[in-house]
Length: 440
Ligand code: XLS
Ligand code: NI
Ligand code: NI
Image (cartoon, rainbow, N blue to C red; front, side):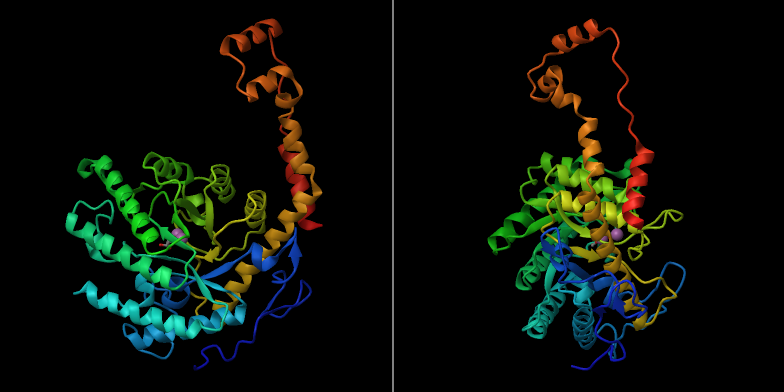
């Protein structure tokens, strides 16, 4: 196998004092935090599409990075070169997982889906052969049902029954490949599952069709031995004006409505949370309290730009609060997929490594600080005290165990005439506590 990143050393942990740009300052894979190794808390994954495929092309200009890896793009030689480059990249960073869309792996044949499927068989054999004897495995797979023009009106939500068959065919094949590669999850990101105008849209029919496609996917997946989680990745908009899986709460309601909640969990992407007008932490909390926190797409957005910029995680406040949620939820079954891309002018191989080192260190720091916040205990204790009236008073306990009636509570209020003000929320104090922990 030729070395694509020969000039880059193996990336090792050197600690916060290191100035080596090719070393981790915080991510120490074997270090134990709250009873678990860092690498077990943080199963990082490489996103095939951003790292091996995207060349910086955007709506306004051509690509700036060379991702040919010595082969002609659009060929199977190139597909295989990407496998070789990807494995070398992951091994240099100590990353054990990858995520893919079907068409990230092979060029799609525009005339015949059977040709594309045969290529997928070939490349998955190649991946299995090349990852044999390594720790590298698939975290999740998915079908790209938003790029091909046939999906202009969506996949499960399309108005065309013919196109719907192609969505089914792609999901079936992507599931086959995911299972073959040992994937732990299968993701549905509803790229164009939404609408531009209600004037031409039958929302009820579209949602029923999406649910039915998911139900068929579950049936098929289980029939071929897939035991992992199916995942919905919520996103409120982009490319469509309105997307059905708007946010975690909406997706959970949808899954429950159609009886899919036993097989599905959520894949929460930080940048999608902020697009929905939520924090990353909010989306994680809503998922977790509903038993739906499955996996994470690790990136961040830019608050000054209203779109999915997919930046590498850099904001330690956000990763600390995210890891606080993950620790409180007892961890996740999925992983941390860097659905992140280099900025367009960061166009060298070195930049690809700097980006992953940044992302991994930012999450490692978040983990360290979240554990410190929990060990510090002041925030947890405050929250507990804040709701003490539900444990320390008889009426509070009756409310919590559902034995109170509306009339009884109204009587209580009549006797009190006027309640005492609730105790202060102490937000500024708690933010100060967080700063103390972060900058200790
Ligand atoms: C797009 C999504 C996409 C999914 C996988 O915004 O983040 O990349 O993660 O289809
Ligand atoms: Ni995204
Ligand atoms: Ni994503």
